[in-house]
Length: 523
Image 1 (cartoon, rainbow, N blue to C red):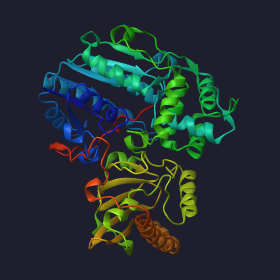
Image 2 (tube, one colour; image 1 turned 90 degrees about the vertical axis):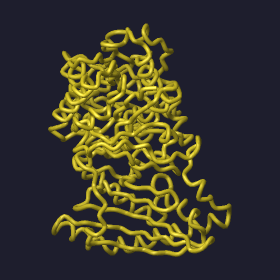
Image 3 (cartoon, helix red, strand yellow; image 1 turned 60 degrees about the horizontal axis):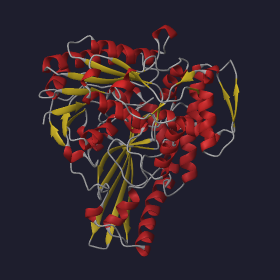
Image 4 (cartoon, helix red, strand yellow; image 1 turned 180 degrees about the vertical axis):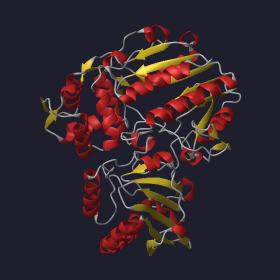
């Protein structure tokens, strides 16, 4: 069977679409700038992975060879980047040209709702322009336009949940009275698959939404009722999108760089202008309350398969390049080596749980203070948490860290995304000492940005020595205590997904791409 190409495979929507396609018997090929970010998922060994970039035309043409259809799930969601429109425009043109050269039968694109006459935000307007560019090519395009997506791990869901849980009284701008037609993520996925299977959707632009048309104020009140909370919403005329974004940055896990385009988009009414999708792909749409409850259940069950924080990197540097871990170029470091009366699998089991609800094993109050400081200056802070309390994928966000490498049972490498004057990394290595003992080597690396970076490191050195030494010792003690209470996990049980352990992806090597937009970040 010829493969279906999925771009944005590491994104919020793409990462959920792929297993659905596999379940329906499709062969799937994934486009990824860094194939390592697809390692470890339950479906990894059932797909082809092509190394490529939507801004690299050569890699796109090679990736599309032999594909009858493709999903285009790539767009930017980062504020403060004047070039995001140009990047999205260039990426769409590259893809339309490559799809034509490859002789594709169809491209399916997920865009955003909104009427252009309503003075759409730059991000919503860009998403609609991407649809125009794709449709301007020779390949028939199905464009689905969606409003707010409600699902576990979506940025909109987590932003709303945090606001409601943290604030008994919410001071909100006038946009909370704007109407919206939210849609459950399961319905978006059903429409995406259904459009591929329904030839009559080719060449059409179709609006997709749930059965409820609500203002944002009504959504928050209903959400609060589902949580068993009573909330008061006070509407004021003076909150600008910028002020709202910084307020969201301080109160929710959503950083200001992502909050700003979300807030800007909320000013426009986004409701379906046509219902053609319901005749072509008939599904039973999920009511808003049911979508929220399903998402809450998934969070409670630790069953969040994809998440906004893992789909998009909020800084310009992170978007335009993946940092390289070059230990020899890091002049400053802190090394902690601790032996444990516990087997290596048990010790690493403690390491891989770091962050999120587990915390950092030592000095958690100081970690929270550092996270709060980061939020104040517009950084990501600690509130992002982690997607799963136990399982880790490369590319996952762990609070203000990003997983750059993960070798089950052996190594965890984290790159810092907090605001620091330089590049910071944290590496954990676990090595066995016989069958019942092991050693943890924990190394903090720092590459300073000239004078200010060195000043930061040496000013923080006393706290670092205190925290890093205590953290390594506490990880060891936690592993030893766990061994006293239960059998340690075996090496072959490390990080196995429920459907069995996935091996490394089948990679079809292509030329390394230059840069790409953040794939599949949800509204």
